[in-house]
Length: 302
Image: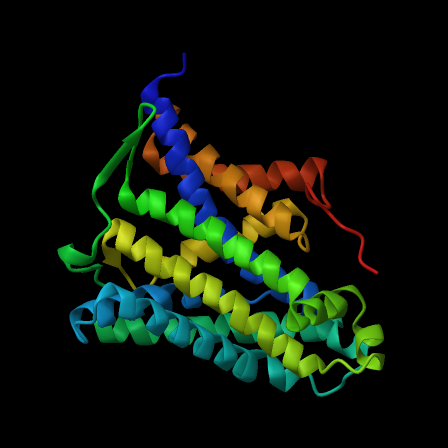
């Protein structure tokens, strides 16, 4: 039989991997529509965590009131990223201009710069310190089942991630805006000729992706109890690795790759010093690029 410690590590790895997956989905949604990478997405995750901290410490809100506050701030921040870092480069509406290499590079750099500005502002305000969430808000109670030992927060990360993924799938396949997002990601010019408002769809993509990222930051902060101005940087890099391994435009690929990275890091910690576990995701990326350069779940775009 598998040792219960190993089972617990695997469960923790799945929980951490789901965090990577949720953030990777936001990156993938934007890439599917604009063929551009939003490197300010890590700050959405950070903003979600800091909104939770402010709601708990400064505003003294109950947890049920913090959740809609995080959703509102995440949506507003996603809208702001689109307006500040992406909208100025979409002056032309033809597909060649929107997806040109110059525009991709410009938006990558502008989103990276915006994320850097947000990180530095938070760093100046909070002095780069790790700040504690009040104990009464933490999801720290131990949970055990089948010999697997987790905290309530680690279990909550997995449950909330599954719920968000289910809601995303419902939105993409059962709502008008979701169908419009799929249409634009498949054929931008065709979607324009069909009367779809491209700017409206792009804004919706940023808002939806940012909602996911902000909620991920909230749940992780409640699970582990600490927030810091640079906490989103590592997460967005791991999410980007998951997106590449998953095939850049594949949402299921991003989810599966994120979970694989989380499980690989957790199990590697059993055999390797903790300092080496950070290398696991990048080793997986290197192997993928060497042997499957299109990713595990690459899809052909129309």
